[in-house]
Amino acid sequence: MTVLPRGVFVGRAEELAALEAWWAGSAPRPAMVWGRRRVGKTALIEKFAEGKRMVFHTAARRPVVDELRELSSRMAPVAAESLRDLRERPYERWEDLLDGLAELARDEPLLLVLDEFPELIAASPALPTILRAFLDRSQGHTRLRILICGSSVRVMAAMQDYRKPLYGRFDESILLHPFRPAEAAAMLPGLPPADRALVYGITGGMPLYLQWWQQDLSVRENLRTLACRPGALLLTEGERVLGTEIESGDKPAAILYALAAGRTKHHEIEDAIRAEASRTLERLITMRLVERLIPVTEDPARSKRRIYRIADNFLAFYLGILSHYRAEIERGLGATIVDALLNDLDDHMGAIYEGAFRDHLRRLAVEGRLGPAVVAVGPWWRHDGQDQLDAVVLAKQGRTRKPILAGESKWARQVDAARIRRGLERKVADLADPDELRYAVCARETLINLDDDVLGITATDIFAP
Image (cartoon, rainbow, N blue to C red; front, side, top):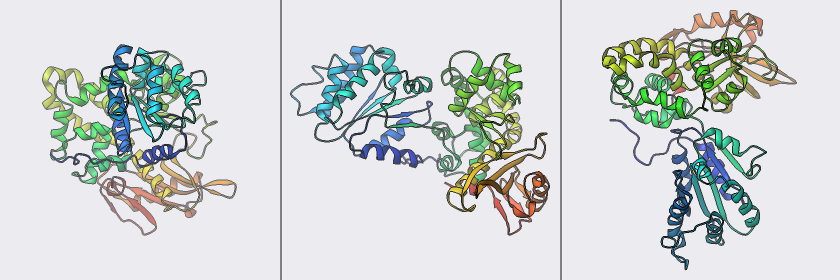
């Protein structure tokens, strides 16, 4: 089986740089790393902590006395010269434990990682207030660096609210999201680019899901193992995500099911769930489970021409395809259902590949390969919903934002670039002078009749590690 060598760390360059900058500060306040389960928070922290003095504690909603005993035991190796034997005489109060850590970090930095912090709060509701008081009295007297980590997105977000004890006490807050296409590709070195794209469309960018994919097996064999047998990992993961990653109640799940069924407009969603949807949609967008799309030329704060889609590829696959077969898979029909899944994948991949295409254009813009002052990349469509463009790139020219590139993506093995360009020139007539724009055409594997002035893109470009 092709897997990444043990110890190889993929992606997260920006997040690592942010943590290192925080660590290098003269007297940094706590930092926070948060995000959904399976997104790679622990791997990021372990990579960041390499070579640093560290106390790492993972909470498990134990009774307070047991949490303090376990954390005291974790402190023991860095407190070897202390007169207090922390294994025999653990701390019994949070205040004393924090003061003990501060003393251990008086002369050299010490990293305290409190993983699954929401579990600590559940056992010790007063802990945020205790921690705030400690930060106030210890400021300037210790080199202790506190890194708080958690998977409960709702709790971690609420901690930063202005009404909460720790409001304004974090110097760095990193909300970790699933991998983007190029990072996901680095997890799949044994696959050709087109297959990397397909796996990304099925599993999304969650590192653990990508690790589950056996790169020496075919797509059919992987789907049979991961999705088409009772208790399969992806089959059970869909329900786990719905049950644990989103807030309690029926509304979030109902919205996701409505989106999976093709109800993408705000009023369609509210009609489907028979309830107000705005606040729940905003929370789902914050978690990057849902994406709001508007024509790239419009002001996001004012535009009413918005549509919504499931942004998490795995959830889109699970809700849009896999969940429809779940009952029969559990009854043992998975061996024949795998063919139906394979047939459904082409329709599933269209919107996902469009998103990956736009992501690649953003990468090119950052590298300066699309011209100066690029300020936006997104889809565009006319007021009547017609002539949709998969990607339009805007650049700032003087005081205005002007289109400089229009592109279209096709989840097809071979695409006639000249034919697509002609269609693009017709569609952009209401947007800009067709002769002043550059064009981009994206295919899965091969582009034919590609003019020199057209930017050709395939999965080889998008899913290059």
